[in-house]
Length: 391
Image (cartoon, rainbow, N blue to C red; front, side, top):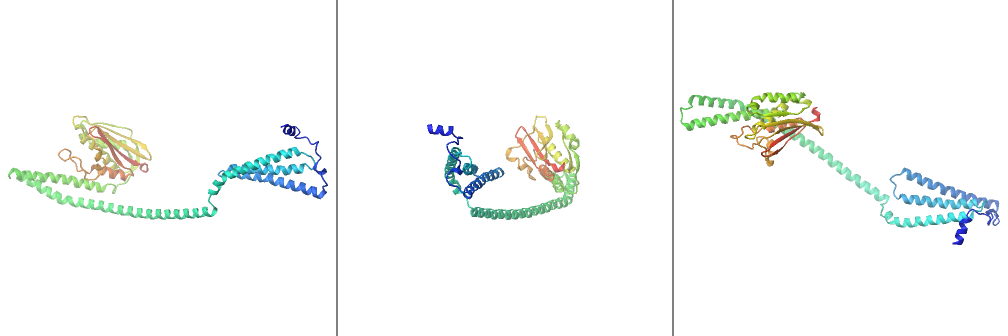
């Protein structure tokens, strides 16, 4: 320990050694060759760590950062030994030179141990050929997926075009059928009414009852054909335009005035939006169907109450019509929007079973959808959306 303490105490002392020029018989050429060689090695060793640090500073995702710094420190220390070898030709700092060499040795073995620890990870890395093969496989997989998506897109387009064609054909059929059925139905209904007027009471009671059944069935058929014709006409021949929904709902309430007064209905509305690109006739029909249904399916002994509101959400205007009526069982929440679907017999609630199908088609015409939340005996809330494109 005394020698160690003495070493550091005399670290800068040069009195016990002569400069290196005076050790041995150096020729001018031999000496300067040694000095210049050490300086060149030192300058190269000094430049290499700078290049490594420069690389790390630019390459933020570089792996094995510690190895780079260890190499930089090791190389810089090695270069320092050559620098002090050159210095000792004039200034014999042999103690500092020894200390630098000791530090270099320690850094060298730290680097060795770290490399040994790192070898398993390094061996697990894929070679350039393996990486290129993987990239090629990924390119091939991406190409397959891309081809599949083109194929799928084409099939979807074909399927969509086919569905649109079939829908148009069905709408055309419904229009033609309902339109052409009106004349024979009116003829049949007219003759039955005439028969009832002239012969009611003159035949036996059973015959009178049969005639009444025919008259009632003709009336239901007339309503059904009219509703079917209206359904097929949704979105046909009408131009979209700006509509103030506040005004439109008030017009619907005015049209339903007698029904509202007779049933003593309480109706409240929130602030409704002004839409810039909608079909006013269809939108009015949608509100009329929902409001009249809420009144029709009221709960006996309870004053009907409706609340109409709207809010903007996720690129849509979402409207709601809430009532306190008889409600709908959960199993029928989707079924009610299918054309001609009825949940009650005609003796309890009249109608053709097409009104909510109208609402669904109108909502979809405006880029939206319709659904209901309901609880039997508590009431229902019908929601429908109008896309932002309709604003």
